[in-house]
Length: 251
Image (cartoon, rainbow, N blue to C red):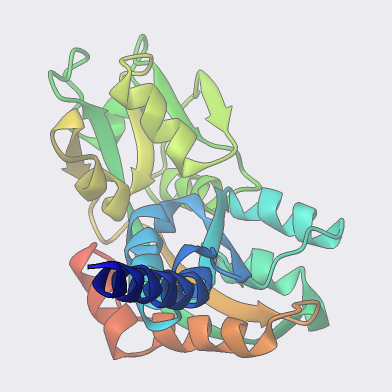
């Protein structure tokens, strides 16, 4: 009995030692963080790709900073530790100069009118956005979606007076979803991602604007290989499939 007891204790000790040795790997968190700065319109699809990336890189966490492209550029220029930048237009990517390593166009997007699900202002066309009393929200001119909205306004020969100009397309969509705006100009992909929260009204292609999205690893990255791998994921077949499913067009 005593011998069997001692044998069992020894086995437990060996097992515990083995688990302790293995447990270090099982309980330790990811050792590397890849930081991706991306236009807010990319949030849903990039978070999906982030999950897939981490599944293939067990020791890596992908951390995102989603905001208006112009704000992100300013943060990078001020020394923010970003590894990758994905912009909603080529103009903001161009502001980074040599800091952006070989930018690659990976998607396109167009605008749509977003209204609350019950459409209280009965907005049906672009012309309605210039109607007196309609509470319209757009992006600010320096933000890609704002520049696109200005192009649509000019192409349609309209003159609207937004009650608010936001720094990201997510902020515009948020005001429509909350009922603080009768209408907002956002990307087609934002309307799709919002589901039943808003309704979308198409803008004729003849007056719409097309934004091209570029992505680049950044020269200051401490994780150059991972940054390149993320760019490859987004521009590759898997990334392109996810972007198409979200409503983005081909670059």
